[in-house]
Image (tube, rainbow, N blue to C red; front, side, top):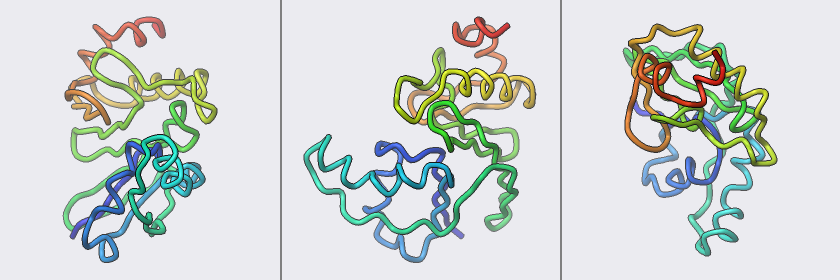
Amino acid sequence: MKAVFVTHSHFDHVLGIPMIECIDSIPVYIPEKDLNLYNSARDFTKNFLGFDPGEFKKPDFLLKGGEEINIGEIKIKVHHVPGHTMGHLLYEIDEKIFCGDLIFSGSIGRTDFPESSWKDMKNSLLYLINNFPPNYELYPGHGPKTDIEKEKLENPFLKELF
């Protein structure tokens, strides 16, 4: 079985959805609190990038965090980590975390957007560090994979929190 899981609904993270040929048969999961961002992604892309990506499929599922979802034999735990956006989620699968723009290798997601919050970002980063083992791999929305231990030691934004 296939599915699309969106960590947050900024246009650069949902832009490919209209381009998936069989999208009508694939469920799309997005953060409930990012529904307005998702619904405005087409217009934002047209205005910001100057092209029409096509119609965005209505999401099949709106997630809040706290859900556990099985896709075939894959168990996905959903965690709400606001800061970069109000609805930002991360997806825990085995010992891997798909963290979108919460954290990157050596950096973190921006908090200067209207739907962002530095206070929420700090709390979400602390949640990440305090609730997952250091060996968990992090797969950010941009850049190379990393892990929690490396980020605790090297990420200047995390050093500020301790």
